[in-house]
Length: 282
Length: 326
Ligand SMILES: Nc1ncnc2c1ncn2[C@@H]1O[C@H](COP(=O)(O)OP(=O)(O)O)[C@@H](O)[C@H]1O
Ligand SMILES: [Mg+2]
Image (cartoon, rainbow over all chains, first blue to last red):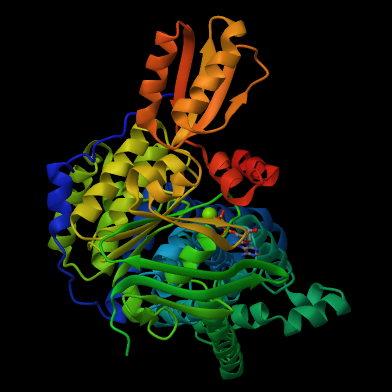
């Protein structure tokens, strides 16, 4: 039970507050593109504030490259530079493909917090927060890919395709990664917590990347495993990227990768948007 | 074409989650420029109602209009007039306070310099300048809530929704939020707030609707509502328990209410509808030579309002839920 409470006189609002509130001008509504760029800026700010994310896209790939080069390089190919010739494009693909996971985790974290409701109650283009986040992720992929490529060159990776070949390989890889990340955004909109998104996506990505031609030649694998490796899209991605970087790509491999990427976009982009618009709205 | 006289007009609004009917035909009218409080315990349906009005949640039947615009058919128009401060702070924890406000200002169409100016102005007005460049995750609950409200008024809205703006705040932060609400109305914004505290509704709101289990069980001004409960509970303890019956008669006479004798042999209590009369009662007790050792006049609590309105105390479930939230 509260004790005697004198009725408070309605306080005169403080001056600064009053001034801040008296500005009722509404600026003109920005375009969809502008709004997406603002969310892109938000994603970039997070790199600044969460240095762990920089670690994920630089140190982690560096460790992978160094570890696999020296751990398996000598044993499997006789010399590290020979091994790098086939390994580096694979490590590159593996690193970038793994980083796509973070998109889902970031979207899920947003949705779980009230900030998602705030964005949705604002007069802005609805998909913008997602588009901005995806744009931020391409920065992540590009950073990681650049780090691995430069490190590879230092360690002795000598691509036969030259600069053009390397850039073509990177472009194909980034396009594939962007397309793949729609799966994780869709997943993140149906799962409850960021941890479960992380779990599920790693459970899919581990077999996809390890049971592939990234680390070892499929010829040395048992028949059953080899069958999986040969239909694994990551295998085709790695073959295509290797081919482009060394200037001996088979058109077929590149086309398969482009087709898979386009299919991922066609299925998961609209699905993500649908899930996103309906999320918490029922 | 209805003329948009009301800031909010809700008719027979219904919403179910599966078999759980959460809103059971809500009617509401909020006039422009008012502070309207939706008062109810946990699970009553307050957040659901607010999310529907803020165009975030679909509903099953009924109509909801904001400034005359249908919240479904004209959602974009509604969004350009409102701001939502949800039950849980809707700010980016990893960004700084300033970056949060700049982001919202830019999203609403301010140029880069204008957004910076607006952010600084709001940070100063909300007493956040010192912490402005720290990540929000280092903020206290009160600071977070103020930033959250600041983010909602980057462009001063015509209608603001505040969902339990002071739940979990210390008294000082609560008073700051109250001042902000008063300043908002003084400058012409309509406020719809939800609360679990009668005192808060009493302090801020022009009108109060009491909501329970998805139904509005009472609506009116604070005075009207309290009339149904009494202005407050008067508790008196006497020095001498033998004089209690005498005191009871005297109280019943002067206050014209029934007096409750408590298990403590020196204590009596009564629901009073007129706080003025309490003073006279105390004087009369003194004249009669009945010594009072202790007395208090309290606001009726939400429990007492519920008891008066529904004849049932608040359910334990909501109390357990409150503890869970805290
Ligand atoms: N997304 C949801 N799914 C199922 N039930 C829900 C959901 N959101 C709220 N509810 C239920 O609706 C009722 C009202 O909830 P809410 O509007 O949050 O109440 P309040 O804000 O008054 O505490 C509660 O019983 C709650 O469990
Ligand atoms: Mg609520």
